[in-house]
Length: 331
Image (tube, rainbow, N blue to C red; front, side, top):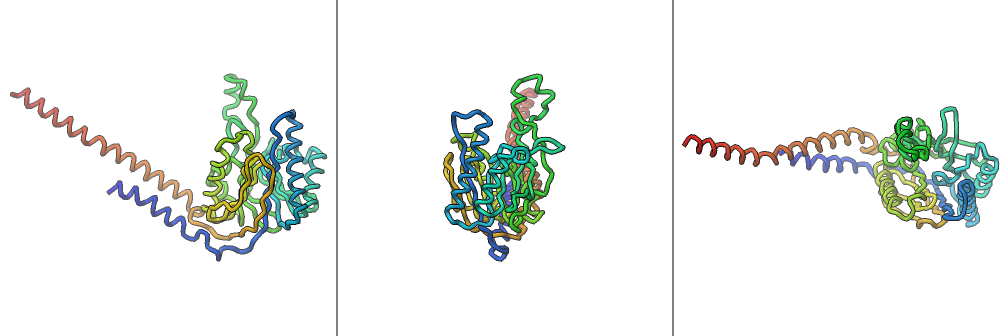
């Protein structure tokens, strides 16, 4: 009986989770979005020149979008598309302003910023008047990359500790306002965490984006694994998802999880699509934490029950053998 219940509970929760998902009546409007993939130079440049080349690439692809005559409402750049801080570097700021001017709409730019807390991995909106708008400081930092757990201790063990960043996590609402629409943002690694977009939805996100930089992973499957996570988040939240990546794959994901467009790896390009803005609050977004807790409890209970059942034949066999030995001794 316990085994049957453990099997049926996940099925029942999955059935409940799909209720209210992808219902047209929850579409309040549409927005035309462009995702930019500038690509990264592969060889032959020192570090600072490489970072500037990446920014140049995203400016150039944005100009190509403008030259195509496509009218869009917002433009999304990937994480690290401007690793040169535009608040401290005039040339970087001028290039971003040039890109905004070319398309005439707000651009969400992945950059590095510094404030009184420390260094931040930031997605920053630049408005059509060239002024900075809303921003999202990455909340969930990648350990051993953007931050180093137990840094003060491990520095005595390995020199490689110093190669890890020392970024500070944000604590914002997980959304930015662009052209009157509320965009939920989870940067790269953040897409792993359920609560990232749950926070965005709680704060009014109508569409989602997961800007990412997968260049260091080369042609591995990592970028496709991350895209699969983004597709699941789109289904969970009942929102369209835009994934702009520096080197690919960039993709546009519909609320039902289907990928309607995508780029190839290490090729510059852009994607444009009219996407729905949604106001739904799905079972997963409303009760997701409780679903995890219930599944964990039943999973542990099922594993414990299976272990107990597995031990029963051995116990009976041992008891029978002991009884036989006792009888033989008496005789």
